[in-house]
Image (cartoon, rainbow, N blue to C red; front, side, top):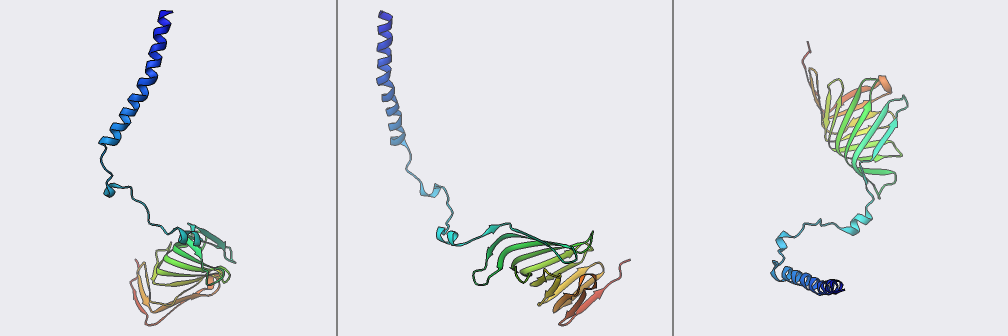
Length: 198
């Protein structure tokens, strides 16, 4: 019986001592802690929440289609948003593409930005455009316009083509015509340096 009373007194004493000890520890944390340093505060992003709510953006959208002759066209953008001034137009940021030329040949596209007219099936690329074929030819221009219906290609500004044994510079380029019968023409002061590849 005496042992039971001692145990009860011990538990009752702990009920008083432990909360007091916890209170003492907390008070020392607050009394001896350093004042907050604004220079060490966690960084936060300065974002306009209202603007984010207004913007409709897709991250890494993928547009894929097939030309009338069965060749595949794929365009992938880093981000895309609708153009509220023109209907059926998508504005893209950093766009890459792959266009099949044949069973084993294709063109890789890379542009800083683009505008895709979905209804007209036209992609207007800008911000520095590069197109490279599997045959080793590289086309560079500031802007390029692609017809996604028949794979017509136009560069209204200066264009440069480098390839095996070839360097060509022109004021503009037009690739037009159906499938394998497409005609490539250059205008605006054409300079060609050709060295036959052995």
